[in-house]
Length: 90
Ligand SMILES: [Zn+2]
Image (cartoon, rainbow, N blue to C red; front, side):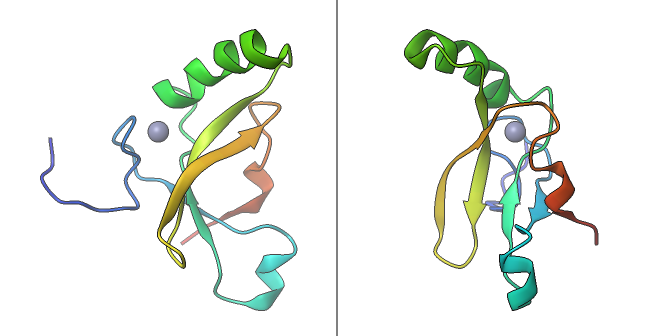
């Protein structure tokens, strides 16, 4: 286990998260979120079951970190590919 507290690393699965920007915010330039797009992430995998049991909807969430505000939380998704078109490479 790494001892570095790198916020771009998902705390749930230890994978490097992806830079992500919504089609709207991307045009502002420079603003992005870190989102864990690892399909094997336990947080994301448990989310399907949890959300379905709780509200009866087939949906989940991925771990999200906003470097602007320092806020962490769930990024809701309704399919395995949801949000993937917002991934910024590099
Ligand atoms: Zn993860």
